[in-house]
Image (cartoon, rainbow, N blue to C red; front, side, top):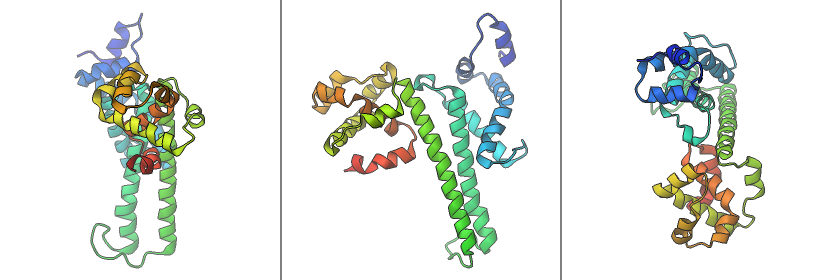
Length: 252
């Protein structure tokens, strides 16, 4: 097995990128994986700290969650999706830490303040209004962090297709029927592995195939091209807030 530092030394003339290192790890280089995680512990701690809003030590539970999330991001990272490992890892780490905090609020905060196990079927009695409001406010703050991270990741995805968030806003179909039709085409792409693979590999719509499958004119598809790509990305990735926003139209 080649070590992380050995690879860097061997490739002095051609410096190996972080993404190339991850590719080697995904091929089974466990030693390289351990060394990469060790070298990025400061990044993990910093990312976790931005969520917790306090300095994080390696002995903290939140740091362990961040460590596991970073390892998860290494295993799931795919350069074809058009983002760097660190950008991808940052989102994954923050999501996992937020989930951990939210779980603790339910399992620990409520139990301590009320004396009742949150998992039981007994009614929660005696919780103060102040505590309810505190939990509600904390949940709102967590959701706001998640929403910002989701939009950030969505913008990165759009950039890999040569698009911007502002373009999608400005060029969205004005009429409800046109939006609904464009979303239906996007859902058709998501449900068809060949069409979806074409879109992500070529970074453009398979217009000829869509003309036949969606029974829609080339002109209509091209006019709504950017919007269709954006909706396809939302439906393909883990964009829960954005997906909820379009859910009513998709499900109609």
